[in-house]
Image 1: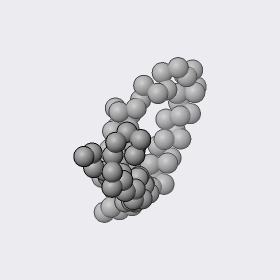
Image 2: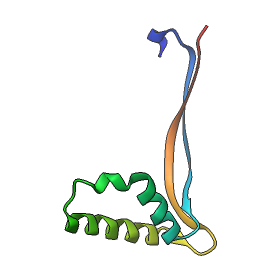
Image 3: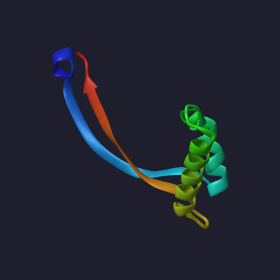
Amino acid sequence: MAEAGFTAVEVEGVSAPFWAGPSAEAAYELVLGQAGWMSDGLTEDGQAAARAALRASLEAHAAPGAGVTYRSGAWLVTAQRP
């Protein structure tokens, strides 16, 4: 970033739970609505297997009263451009 003219570059790792929905079923509908296209190139059996794996993962991350959550992390990068 310095080569692009930025100064005071800071990089901070942050983590927070990713909340996917209030229930496994709601999260399943959300994920399919946003990323269902990713299975378009699969066979019918492949699509069924991918959806079953998605449902199993969502159910494994669901907790009563907390919904479906996954661990997540990102880099927060800040800088100034004089």
